[in-house]
Image 1 (spheres, rainbow, N blue to C red):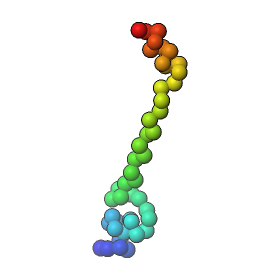
Image 2: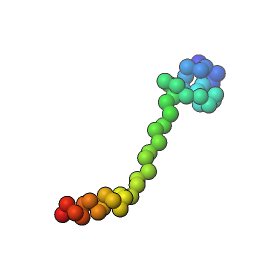
Image 3: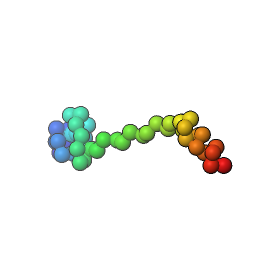
Image 4: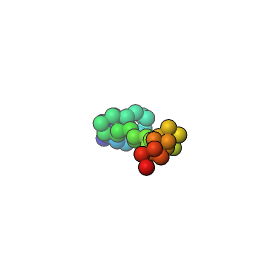
Length: 46
């Protein structure tokens, strides 16, 4: 078991593939500014 073994993490890294042994990293969602419409709603509620 080593670099050529597809079932190990090292083998996945060498081949550049993903799977159960080497899951992909989840992307972080970019923070978005609240829209003008939601800001106006907040002002009306106060």
